[in-house]
Length: 443
Image (cartoon, one colour):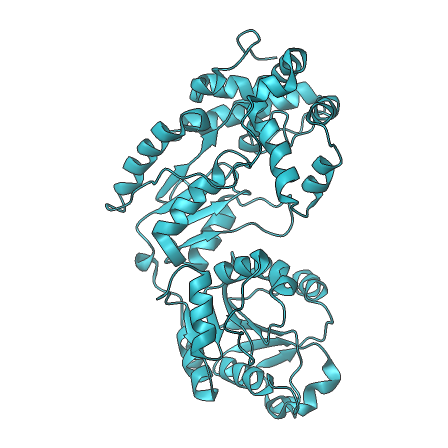
């Protein structure tokens, strides 16, 4: 590899190679291959073991290698972030636990190409990947397995037996080949995918069902990117960076994409709106049925009773379920100190954004909506079919949301969700078919 093709490469190894470590040769070969014409930042677990990896000593002979000794990936990331270091490529080597590296993968994956080495020991033939491991595999651009068994298990987990991103890397030559493939210059702009199908994934708005269809069709050219910080936003600049880092990307889903979208990009947006009362009940059921470990899940599960949960949400004007859609699509654009006027501004921003979209789907008429989206997507991908499937549906009996809440509480929730209701009345009016109160109007 010539130096003019050089990259700024980050190599992270959770296990520091040593003579008795079965992963030593793999990590050594990985670093050595990455060094060819590249500036490499290497993050080992323990600095004092560096001399035991021959290629790292003496340090003066390797001017392209920078070593950062940080015991934890997250603290390392903070160090790099504070010092303004950016990377084109990130390689995770000797990974002992996918759960351990998941936050770091989520930090790097949107803006850099990520490779993941599954380790020298491979997998047992009956290994079953956890949901966290599955997320790591899906986020990586390339995956290196120690043998064919490992490669087949990874490919099966990805539901793609011939996935081109899975490679067997068994020796130093394999690492050299991986480096030549993974560290090459980015494709020219004209090689980018014809269009990006962008799913603005509003939580509990049939998003998982949409993602399942997109993933099934686009395969490794579909990605789901959410940064570690739950308050992070993927705006115009971030979306351009993602496309530059992943030029072959054909479809992207994220809970963090916020309007406006890049005006100069060929994007097919997918957005669904939902009756906010039905959505509140769905949020409650989802967190109680999945046990998802995050701040929102812990908060919701603190309430055993749906009605108590709803009353608390109203009392605190909680944006998780109160006017969530208007706030989300309004990109929290308003800084007005008065809460109602702030929401008015966010609603107007949301309406302006939706008016600029070719179509807005409705969860209430999901079947009809996906036909429209299918037509739009097939203009760029002619054989695309939007299969009618549902994912992440609660296993609870389907008692109507308003029946579970009761009339008085339902009317209160409808009044509090006035901004979402106004949004639906303009762009997805069938979503208000079960509305029991007066026709929604602006505050």
